[in-house]
Every structure is written in structure tokens, then in C-alpha cells.
Length: 326
View 1 (cartoon, rainbow, N blue to C red):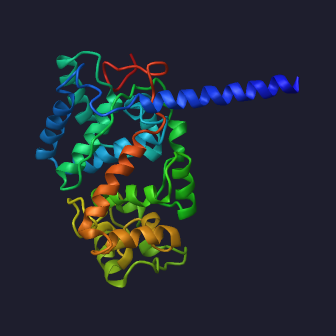
View 2 (view 1 turned 120 degrees about the horizontal axis):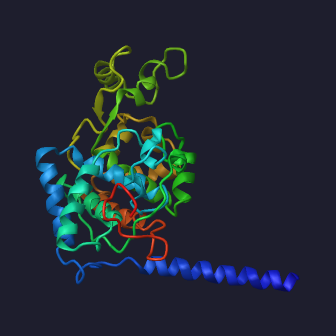
View 3 (view 1 turned 60 degrees about the horizontal axis):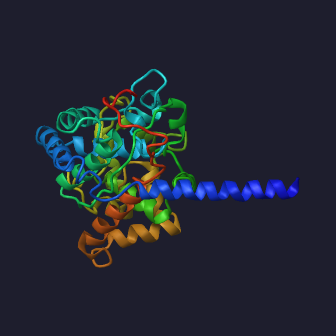
């Protein structure tokens, strides 16, 4: 009996390794070069069209891709609508950019029906959004299939603005991402906004006694209190990087160094020895090679993230409409 169980265990390990290998091999650069040659250019022109009328769509698309990959893997499951789907989770509140993906999908269905997955459109759109915001560009391996499962309950473990560095590391490690990836990917906060509701406690009630978060620089604290008064509108939007809110650059990391981060989870990256070292590298003009290092490593981290638990033909599909399974 023991020998039989041992053999079963080894067979299981071999199966898991083979499945993992098949999934990793399912992604490749130029996946649609024959089946839909215009796929990437159609996604790009669609994103560009929306960006021209509303540049703030860029961080929305980036966040949408991030939230997709952290739940059920990068399979477009965050795009599915339904009362119990991922979009219904409080952790996914304020998601933006679905209309961009829908527009690109409609155009692609006319060009090459049933070929390009919504998950791939989302990965490509996130890359194009960064590029249009004066950030880096990178080659996006494609070949993802769309998932058939989307549950709000599974979105509860998404990274939160209240997470300690230890919890952030744990959540990223669970997805195969290391500490360097964590800091690099959070650099996406160099563009985008958040609600006063998510950080106002740092200004007026950080220790439940009316004190402010001591890690906020005094001058920045005054600025934030003006933007978010104690009894003001909690839904008022504030840029995550007030210095250059629409430009994808290293300003975010300099904000952490100077005590000018909006979210507590971001500012905590400066107080942890391991994450501090990465922040310093990107914040330094010389060590950061004038921003080139962050640009290069952000692209690599995005490729790594966008490969999380991708679906293959066996457990996925190519949706005709991104908001519902076929």
C-alpha cells in the first residue's frame, strides 16, 4: 500500500510539472502573427483612441490587468459581469477600462472572429497604456485563454492599502512574485488616483487619538489636509503621485523616500530593509540610471506577472463577448 501511494505521489508530481510546462509554453511573442496579424495594432489603436479623450484611462487599464491576474490568474475573469462575479467584490471597487477592452474585442471579432482572447487584449492594453503615459514598452507574450470562473469571494485576498509589508510580500509570493517584483510593480502608482476615503485616516485619526501618521512629511501633510478635509467628500480623487500624476516615471519612489506617499501600504516600503533597498535603487538618479533601470525592470516584472496561472485550451476558451462566458 505504501509503495502504491508513493508511486501515485510521483505520478502526480510529474503531471503537475507537465501541466505547468504546457501552460508556460502556451505564451509566446507573436502568437497571433498568422491567425490575426493585426491583433496588437488593433488593441493599440483602440487604447490610443480612448487615451486621447481621457488620459486617466491608463492607470485604469493597468489596475484592471493587475486585479485580473491576482484572482484565477491572467484569464480575463475580472471582465465577467454578474452578482457574484469578481467585479462585485469591494476589493474591485472603482475598476475602470472595461469599455476599452470591449471596444477592442468588438473590432477584433470583425477582423478575426473567435481568435483573440479577452485576457490577451487586457495584457496588451495594459502595456499600451503605460507606453502612452511616457512609460516603457515591452513585448507581451500572448496565447492566454479566457477563464470560465469569476467569483467575488476569491477577490478578497487582493493586495490592500492597509497591508503591512509582510502581508504584501506574502500575497505576491503566493503568485510566484518576489520582493523585487513587488516594489517594481507597485511603481505603477506613479500614475493613477485614489479616493480620500482610503487614506484620510492617516491625516486625522491614525492612532485613534486624532494624531497624523508620523511617516508623512509635515509639508505634505498640510497639502493633503487641504485636499481632503476631515468632513469632506470621501470619494474625492487624489493623484497617487502628486509630483507628476500623468507621467510614468520614478517620481513615485522619490515620494516614498521623502515621506510623500499617499497610501500607507506604499509608504511602508521605505521602512522595510528589503523593500527599502529596491526603492533606493529606483529613486537614485545615478543608481537608477536616470529612470532607465525602472523602465526596463518594470517591463520584465509585467511579463512575469501576466504569466500567472494562464489558461490553456483545456481549461479555457476565447470569449465572443468579454463580459460573459460563451
